[in-house]
Length: 90
Image (cartoon, rainbow, N blue to C red; front, side):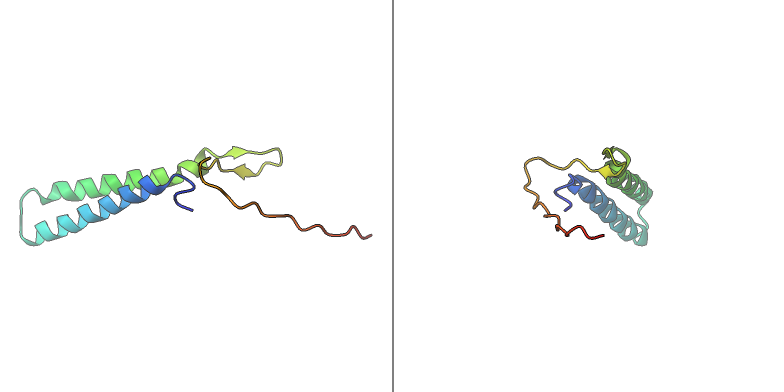
């Protein structure tokens, strides 16, 4: 599903932010002066990743019924759900 919505890069950015925060904690424990820059980098990367994850929700197109229709990657096949036909009873 992540690949289908083109969100794989957002997950990588958040993972990079997490790795940057881990590097900050290690450097901070060893009292390295420049460790604060890793903390800032981690915060920026996590914020960018979070906004990137919201992109399909914010820019989804609405269909005629007002429901959001998320545009997916055209190269990935999506199984089509068959609607169940119910007999009309009154």
